Length: 473
Ligand code: HEM
Image 1: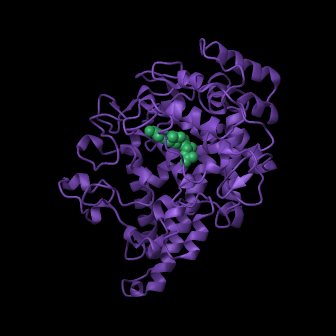
Image 2: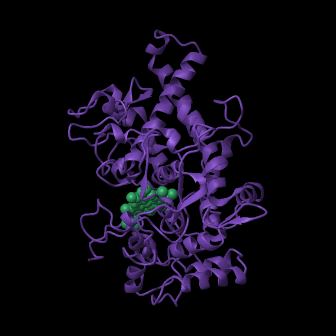
C-alpha cells in the first residue's frame, strides 16, 4: 500500500507549510496552534478495514437525522470545495473566474459558469438540461433516462461538478436541484405572465434565469441554516453564532478553512450508510456501492436504482424516512475499501487521517481547549478514545477528525437541555462546521444573510422551506 500514490487536492499544497495563513481559496482558522504528529503506522492502523473505525456492514441509526442529509452534506461539500478554478482559467470570462475564485455556497456544481460560459449545461439560456432532454448515451431505457442526468455517449454525466455522480443517490440529488431550478423558472414565467413571444428576447430570458438562480440559492441557504445545521450541530449553537457572531472564523475575505475541509466537515463519512433502500416497496437494503445500486459515475441501468425521496427525507409526515448512521467513530465497512480508488490508499478513514496530518492540523484536544471546552469534557473524550483504540499510540495528540468523531460519539449534539450522543457534532466539530458555513454565507455578497437578513422563503406560503419542500415544489 503506497501513500506516495495518493492524489493531492489541487490548491491546498500550500497548506503543508506552517507559515501561510491563507493561500488562495484555503486557509487556517487556528493558525496559532501547532500541528500534531502521529506515526503514520498508527494512523493506518486506526483507519484500516477491520480496525477500530470499522463499523461493519450493519446499521446503527440516529433517531433524528433523515438519511438524505448524508447526500445533501456531500453535495454542500462539493459546492464549496469545487476546484475547477484552474480549469475555468481557460475560459476567457474574467467575471466567471472572479466569481469562482470566491469560495461560496453558490451552487456552481449546478450552474457551472452560467448559461454563457457553460452553455452545454443549458437549454434556452434558462433551463438546465436533464436526461429527459435526451442523452447522447444510448442503451438506456426511457424511464431510466428520464430519471437520470444528461450524459455523453460514454455515460459520463454532463454536470457542473463531476463528483456529483459519485454514487447513485448524489447524482439523483443533483438532478433534483436541477429540476427545482427548472420549476422555479416556470414559476417566475407564470407569475409574470410572460408569453413565448416575450421570451424570444434573450435579455428577458437572462433576467428570468438570474432571478431563478437567486431564488434557488437563497432557498438552499435557508435549508442549510434552518434545517441542515440544526440537525448536525443543534439549534443552540446555530442561534449563538447567528445572534452573537462568529468567534474563530473571522477573516476579511472568505476562504475554506483547512480545519473544515480536511477534518471537521468529513464528519459525514461516519453518517454514511453501508446499506439503504431507495424505494418504499423495497423490502431489503442494498449496499450503497454494490451491484444493485451500481458504483456511481454510471448511467441508471435498473428500475431499483430510481430514488423515491420519501425514503430519504421526511416528505410524507405519516411515514418518516430512514435515518442516517450514528455520528460516531465508525464508518461503514465499504468506505474503508473504496471501490473506485484503483491506486493507493483505499481506506477513506486512513486517507482522512493522513490528509489531516499532512496539512499540519492541530490535535483535537488542543483545538478543544482553545474553543473553550472544559477540561473535564476533554478528559472524557480522551478516556473514551483510549478505551477504544487498543495498542494504537496517539499519545502525541488525537488527530482532529478522529477527536471530532469521538466527541460526537460520547458527548454529541447540544440540544439545549440535553446533549444527544451519536446524533450530531459536539462543540469542537460543531464550532468549525457552523462558523465556516455561516461565515461563507455572511461573506458572500450575493446571499440573503448579506443582502437582506430579514428575508424569508417566498416559494412556500408558510414562510419556512425544507428539503421536503424543495423536492416537491
Ligand atoms: C457517501 C459517500 C462518500 C464517499 C464515498 C466519499 C468519498 C470521499 C473521498 C474519496 C474523498 C477524498 C479523500 C482524500 O483523499 O482526502 C472525500 C473527501 C471529502 N469528503 Fe467525502 N465521501 C462521501 C460522503 C461525504 C459526506 C456525507 C461528507 C460531509 C457531510 C463528505 C465530506 C468530505 C470532505 C469535506 C472532503 C474533503 C474535500 C476537499 O477538501 O476537497 N463526504 N470524500
